[in-house]
Length: 251
Ligand SMILES: C[S@@+](CC[C@H](N)C(=O)[O-])C[C@H]1O[C@@H](n2cnc3c(N)ncnc32)[C@H](O)[C@@H]1O
Picture 1 (cartoon, rainbow, N blue to C red):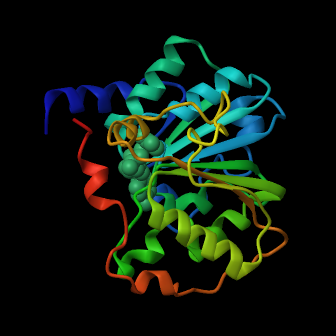
Picture 2: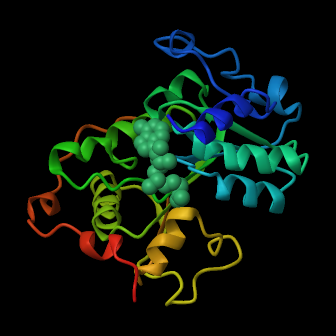
């Protein structure tokens, strides 16, 4: 492992905003902060917004700066990437930011029913192979987990360049009859991108350099709590995505 990565891993442990639980602290167990983030971590009563698969945490930090009246938590498994966000939040003395290094599959060990107000999912891996569809962060199993922590009326924001993930998410929304307030296939081309939607993550910058349109979906879960597994016809197509374009920057 590179020296720089090791240095970042070590520095992460010195940041008060950075939580890195041991596996046995959360495997089939509740983390001590579950249900107590406001009281024991943020020391206020304000709303909690998550960024899932936060990478370097651009949304977590940018939203926290714009909304000092809300709390933001970035979640990812890659500590070396998260270091960037945690370092920035620490240097800027931001008290409304947290980072949790964990797999999103364990998210229910961290958040109690109604504890979360909003979720951002920023450029997640689209998991194009059909057999990996259940790993998509908008797949029914994940929505079921979000439903167990999101407050009534709470919303989920998805930003992605992946057409396949965008259309899959639309199909999931339709299948379960979920309330969807925005479904936009090109936020910059249509002028939808406001100050918040224009925050650009590391991956977004890469995809923009490839000339790809950026999509945005904003939806809720209504009062649904059950999300049975769902096979989408669109997964039967051979040509799934803008896969080649995603990896080639424009000349
Ligand atoms: C394509 S990157 C996007 C990162 C960042 N949101 C951005 O837009 O630059 C996807 C991120 O999701 C994280 N990730 C993927 N699956 C995950 C999982 N099951 N649990 C935690 N993190 C995950 C990866 O570590 C990676 O940082």
